[in-house]
Each structure stands twice: as structure tokens, then as C-alpha cells.
Image (cartoon, rainbow, N blue to C red):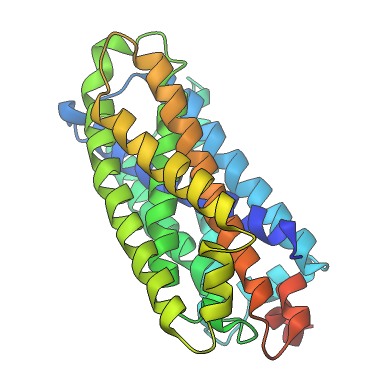
Length: 304
């Protein structure tokens, strides 16, 4: 078994980062009067709180998994730069940017100039990109599990985070009453996500095939594809989380857009969680040096 808090953090942190990146692009387009991506105020008022909650709960899961909240503070304030310290700092910055945008979206009496919005969006997008990659680097840095020692893992997580971020946008758009005049940017997002899902599927296939061919990683990959986790991998992740939403996005229309958006969002998010569940769970079959590393982010033990 493995620590579910780790899986929840990886999913929520990645989803929050993906939502932040997508919303920052849309905020920039709105500030620069980009009509192709223009969405109503109600959309941002609904989507920004979702982003904030995902990042905040993800941080809480990380703190609970660490066991001692001061370890995250030590990471953020650490004078020695490392991938993990940079990722933790980016996570805090990402949450700050999301909160700032949420305040602007929810309170009519709070205004910001175009330069401030664009600057905040650039900072938010950069921190989101680092945070999304960080969720993969976090696993990759655990020497206990050879199955996670692949440069493809952070890339798979980044692509999945972007797709989950678009899912959050679809979820918010489904509850916007003025959605029909604003379907054009949603169709654009659906097309973008189609490319992201295809890239994610390709990277995931390469990751699994390389693991199957490796001496130290074959057992974990076999458990994922042919063994105990096969049903979740093929049924929930590959079919439900990649193939079906890809097909639904291809036929996104005005007539039944709310139903389609809800289905697409739900399937993408379930697929995103299933991806982390499968990757983390497969590591249970490949703990070679430090079994306790699977039950918490123990590479941070050295900090305190």
C-alpha cells in the first residue's frame, strides 16, 4: 500500500497549477482585448475559487504527509537551491497569485490596471509551470523506486496538469448562464486539450514501454499494465480519462454544451487522479532501497 495523501497532493497540486496556467492565459487575453479567448466575468468568478481551493488543499495534503508543517517552511526559506526547494517556493507563489486573481474576480470594488494584471498573469503562469513539473520531480527524486527514475515522469505530469486545468475551466463554464455566446474560446480550449491528451498518451506509453524493458522497473510496469492495477490503468485512465474525453471534445457543440462540458471535465479529472494513483501505486512493486520512502516524502527528513 502507499500513502493516499501523496496521491492527493500530486493530483490537487497539479490540477491547481494547470488551472492557474490556463486562467492566466485567459486573463492576459482579456487584459489585452483578445476577443478570440474572451469569456464573461462570471466565468472567472467561478473558476478562480476552484483553482485556489485545489492549490490550498494540495498544500494541506503535503503538510499532512510531511508530518511537520515547519518542513515546508524550511524548504521555502532554504538558502541552498534545489529542485525540491524551488518547487515548494513556486507552489506558495502559485497560491498567492491565484488568491490575488480570485479577489479581483469576486470583489467588484477591487480593481487592477492592465500592466498589473499582465504582470501577475506572467508570474502566475511561470509558478504554475514550475509547480506542475515539481509534482513529477518530487517522485523522481525518491531513489527508493526505480520505476519513478525517468525524465518522462515530470513531462507526463505537466501534460496531465494542463489537461486537468482545462477541465477546471470547462467545469466553471458549465455553470455560466451566458455560455452560448462564449463557446468559441471553449472550443479553442477543447482543441488545445485534444493535442495535450494525445501528447500525454504518447509520453505515458513511452514511459511504460521503457519501464517494461528495464531490468529494475519491469515488475512495477507489469503490475501496472497486466497485474493488480491493470483495471484502473486501462479502464479508468486510458479509456475513461484519455480516450473518451478526447472523443467528446471532438464533438463539442452549442446545443448541449453544458452536458458535454460536465462530462469532459469529470472524465479528465478522474483520469488525472487515476494517473497519479497508478504511478504512485506501481511504485509499491519496485521499492528497492528504502521501503519507508513510499509512505511519505521522506527525502525531506534531512531537513529536520
